[in-house]
Length: 128
Image 1 (tube, rainbow, N blue to C red):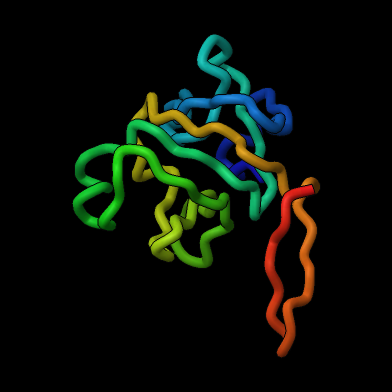
Image 2 (image 1 turned 45 degrees about the vertical axis):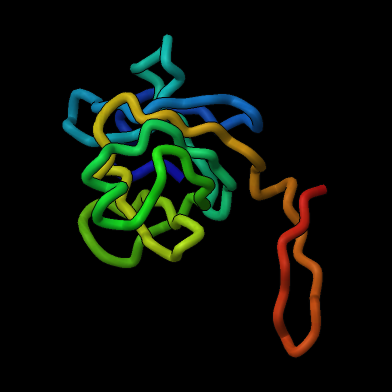
């Protein structure tokens, strides 16, 4: 998913194992791009697993995060922009809150994750 505000730019899907950086596009929107190709937006599916590095101090303090955290890409239910991440502590943060240059590496694409039932209607993600 790429935020609607990035639809005017060239884009491509994310690839497992690649590292992207938050980038301010000419529209003012923060999105993801390959470091040496800042004009191409990278689109992620919801539930894509990420490792985020270089988390800004203000986000670390306000959400109890470390400089590097694992997270999941999500579609936010509120706000103008819908692209965001959910950290292990359940904090959800819009990509717009990240300054340019924060690294996000795709740990596992959603199509490579499968769900197994663990009883009582609960499920758990397993890597394939």
